[in-house]
View 1 (tube, rainbow, N blue to C red):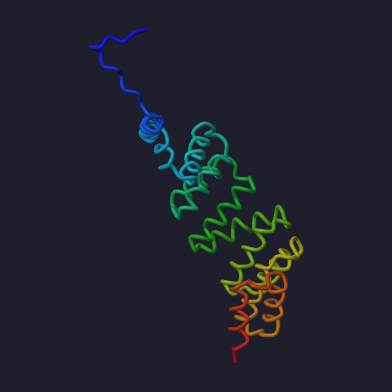
View 2 (cartoon, rainbow, N blue to C red):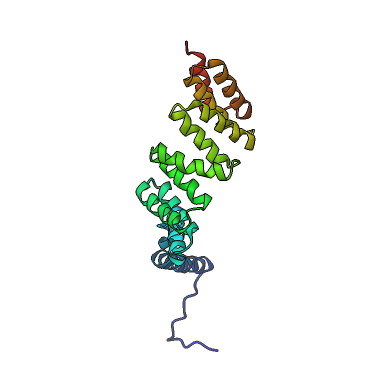
Amino acid sequence: MEVSPNTKPEKEISLKTAIIIILIVVVCVAGIGLGVGYAFFWNKYDNVTAVDLEMKTAQNFAAKQPKNPKAYIALGYQYLKRGQMDKALKEYEQAYKLDSKNIAVKFNLGILYKEMKKNQEAVKYLEEVVKENPFHFAAQFNLAILYSQDKQYDKALKAYEQALRVNAGAADVYLSRGEMYAAMGKKTEALKDIDKTLSFVPDYAEALAAKKRITEQQ
């Protein structure tokens, strides 16, 4: 095809220029995509934490199954984790109303009252738990701590022993009992339990500190 002398030839685009133009277009499209994503999708989830999702799940569970005590236990536990004791107690009491014989309900009430420093109420529920199930490790351990705090050392020792029958390798139980022995002025027994703790967990900071403190006691 002939080109008229009066027609200006079209300028050819160099390969380098074409690549640059393509890159600019790709970047623009990607930028628009990111903008849309952040505006309508991604940032909506970034603002929701795992803790928030757990709470929402527990709330939905209670809303959908209002007759299920487990739903209120789950919701109460979420409040307990947040330090919202009154709200946790409300949910646990609702669970107790639905099933006063439920051992899980009693245990959770006991732990909540322990966290609230209401030892008498805590002991009441935890004693009911171990009466029904003497091999409930967590209930026995927490009862031992509560008895020890109230200086009921004989009861505490029995609860510690029962906890160790269930789990002979529980370092925390030995540490707690060692601290109690120290409070009782039984240094030898205290150090024996602390050393037992360290045999399980050699770098246990609390146990190392307790051993140093007890060793230096007159």
